[in-house]
Amino acid sequence: MKVYTKRGDKGKTSLASGRRVDKFNALIEAYGTVDELNAAVGELMALTQSEGIRDQLSQIQYLLFNIGSMLARDGVINDDYPDIKESSVSLLEDWMDRYTESLKPMTAFILPSGSHAIAKSHVCRTVCRRAERRVLSVQGEVYSHDTIIMYLNRLSDYFFVLARYFAQLEGVDELLWKAD
Image (cartoon, rainbow, N blue to C red; front, side):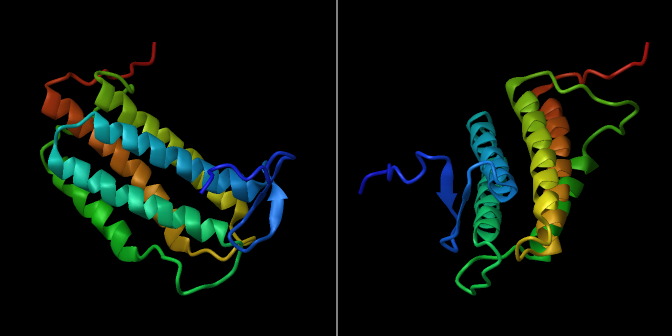
């Protein structure tokens, strides 16, 4: 099977419904940004030795792929496609709560720096925020659940907490922002 089809050579692509749209369509931008986040999460996985964190990131990657497939179905409701459940949002909250228990209280904004894993966690956080905005821009155009937005919103928080946790694991002082 060839990877290339040449069907996109004129700037169009197909949704899972079969409908052809411009590659700059807001829906393509939404699930493309979710895909970009998924790639960044893969890079973050490569930066940690913790099997527990790697397992969490792997679960996140599967759910991000689910979100992309939900968006790509173009409003077509099909039980064969996966869904995002509130239990996935709760799981993120549980992970964050466990990490936060061991962290020092925040006293200022934290700058995204310190190590590769910390910085990449912040990149994941910011790409996740952009994905959330892109998905919100197509909310109502396609069949979607509020749980996608809830999940992405909580996921960006997870990446922030994970960055702080990496700093603690690596013994790196967090760089605090100070208004001058």
